[in-house]
Length: 540
Image (tube, rainbow, N blue to C red; front, side, top):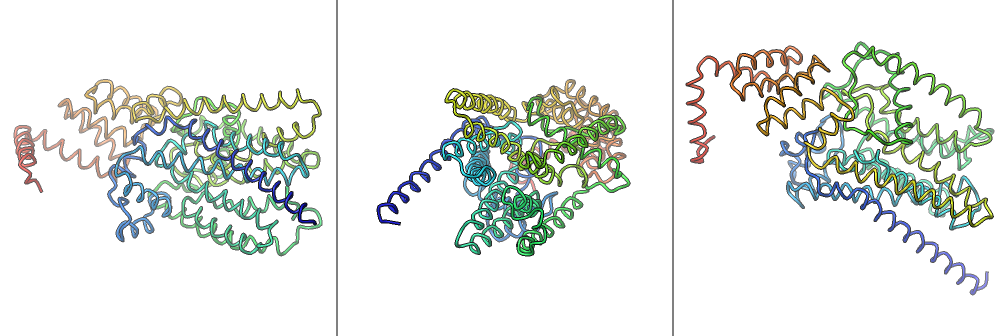
């Protein structure tokens, strides 16, 4: 190659990099705009209170806080996520705006990385293609992933920092893996991918699916595995470090769930129910990706699980039909089949096969799988732009993609506003997906405002939906005590203890209420004396 040719090639490469980074900046800015209502949101009465408002242990980065972050099992083992929250406290104290800004910034970064991942995956799938068409397809994929309303729960909820942080490292690990396959410094990029996988797993165990995702990429579009190439030892062995890390993280995740008593055993949720949950979840997530309306912070499992049986059966039929269709089109449209497999793999940890919690599905579960369906949309745009000769058809495709992205962005902007405060969140939840938890949370907020009778109405509805709701019974008792209906309050505290015998707060409230009944004048005098001591600053 002559010096002139080398200069021209270098200039073209520099121009390509500049174009990519300009697109990346635009993507990040659009993400920030779409999620901007979250920047003015506060902490909400949905884990934020337990994780931050009532938790002094994460506040700072000293030895005591670091020890707690790396040993605590609070439903999730996520030391890296706790580290970022410790930094939050150092930078902004208990001002929620800073916490939200970090969430939005991390998601914007994930969107940028998603663009570069999509660029490489689409290039490998389509082959030689015009650079402009490739950038357009990758940008569409990144934006549909990033500004989709299903991402709101992960971004606008401070507690779900673990999703966006894990997403950044997960996508970086994939990008470095792809870079390792076409780089002279293969080992350096490979081991960087392994290190990033470890960081993703330290943020949230959801990244346990990474080894399987890399294998799927090896099958399509990379073509490193397939007919006649299934026994390539090098391809399988290079996944071993990723698999070992994922296995360790999976064990820690199970231990963490058991530590808070949310992991169901087979006696509670049988195999048939778990398979039904998985089928229902797959149908729900595909549907909500296509029609992202009526989103809620909680889709609660009904108290009578038998009511879900027809839904499970119908979902199983739809999933089976979808699986047959994906197998039949695997030769004509291998990308569609690979995307379907990747979608299932990325959702496997949260489909209910390993069941925990009150929810049947959750918007946040789509944070990783959402990119797969977005890649299909980007691939469709790329193929149209690359294959058509008519400028009008190209403009129509671009306009249609822009309309979809703008519509998703508007829906995301509106959904982000739902997370503004606890009252807004739970009022919305009661309207779109009524649940025992939603009614009980709204009741707590109304009682705090002095609207006790309205609060009791919500507690009553919460108990109707879930008769074993210890949380609703306990707070119903508190509301009754606030209006001096102590006899009735005792009955609800006792009901809370029957539902959850280890419920310490209900035991404490029951004891205090019985003291009030036994000696109301003495109780009032004790309370008055305590307030006076607090006023004098001598309370212990």
